[in-house]
Length: 381
Image (cartoon, rainbow, N blue to C red; front, side, top):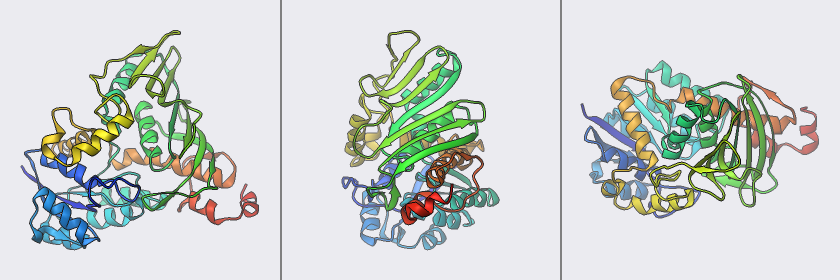
């Protein structure tokens, strides 16, 4: 069977790397083109020039280029749709596309959505329409992550006690880490969250407000605790991308002063072989890997190589899951657990109290913090 694929949100030229667009459509396209069972049939972007440039890049005819997502679906009848637009538009597009008769699967960029109610509605609608909805948390498929999970499952560091991580923010970049914590806790539900955020300096990623700094801690139902330290500029408290702490040792993914993966059960660290792969699938560090990603975009299919970048592995998993009928590892239901912790952290910062899960909010607490005077926020405690 051949799956017909459409992409919504082509973005700018892939070499234009900024926080208004990372050309994720080009990465999705590369992965689909690498498969014999997928065919690109159309694309849409509200900027006609972006859509036309993308179509030319991937070999689509001008008749397959649209500015309206509903017209795209009506005219091309895709089986799979990749949504690569900014997060504030995710919910509307996912809900609309899920209701299209031809669509069997939607692969949406992360983070899920900017309002908690919208995140839930995306999941509910996909379930009602029997559409496979996945969120592109492709770092689950990184070799250091997979090896670390195997080490944990093999009992090499004893029982899991704590997960610590650092990133630029809790929401956009940090959504990957909350998702990885879900992986390492085997899908354990959160129990509570406590956080503080710094909004004194504006930080917008893809049109969405993020905090300049944050410190957050939370606990899962099984007693495992989480700690996050974020800073969009400057140092963080945690000096590794992700540290996995067990009763008998520690595992670190991308430590500040070490290899992509290492473990210790005593005073000394042991480097774990990842076949030369870092977090991004190429090079020894996430920064080297990021540059490799950019360089690979221009060639698409031929530059994916035998060791594909993680976004290619994610799309392979999405398509294979659709073909087999098995639930994907990055299903929206799975990603919702980590996303809830983000919103719980924001709500904790807004109200200056610990927040128990499940959360009972609708909107975006971080946005409310920036819109509410400090003296009024004090009354929310």
